[in-house]
Amino acid sequence: MILPIVLYGHPVLRQKGARIDALTPEIRQLIADMLETMRHASGVGLAAQQIGRAIQLTVVDVTGVEDRPSTLHLDGREVSPNAHMPLVLINPQIRPEGHEVTGPEGCLSFPDVYGDITRPETVTVNALNQDGQSIEFRAGGLLARAIQHEYDHLQGILFIDRMTTELRRGLRPELDALQTRTKAALQQPPGLG
Ligand code: ZN
Image (cartoon, rainbow, N blue to C red; front, side, top):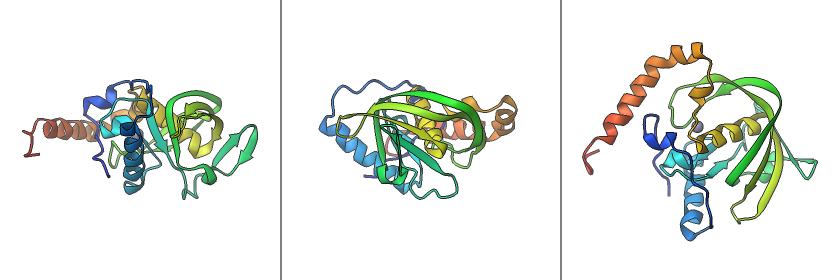
């Protein structure tokens, strides 16, 4: 089922996600729905907060992004990222590494807002997958950027927080307008919005 994506201004985007203790049928269904929602929105990642749930769950899929390469190392060996997509990350822990690189980012919770964000080039990830198995890998390129962006969501951190002050100031009118629209929509009586 395609779920509605929560937009900037909704308080859940600022909540830290609770740890997931068990892969219940509800969580499994949520994973399936998040994958479907991410694909439908043509996103490379989606965090649980973005569909209104503050829990430690995110999905990532960089398949088909040809102009911004990704790398993936499993057990010290380089493998094809596409062969391991989509990634389902439960309770992820990350260790960003390497020098910082600047690249464009967008976010499904911020329609039509884009900006350059500086982040470490690679990241080592520990998480549980969709089967509850422990996984560890090292990602680079777009995949590393996407995972850091989604990990931030799980902590209640948004990509606008990582923009330069100057960039954020330039986007301020758009951000304020989006926030105002979202808050107004939240105040609609049920059934009318
Ligand atoms: Zn995002």
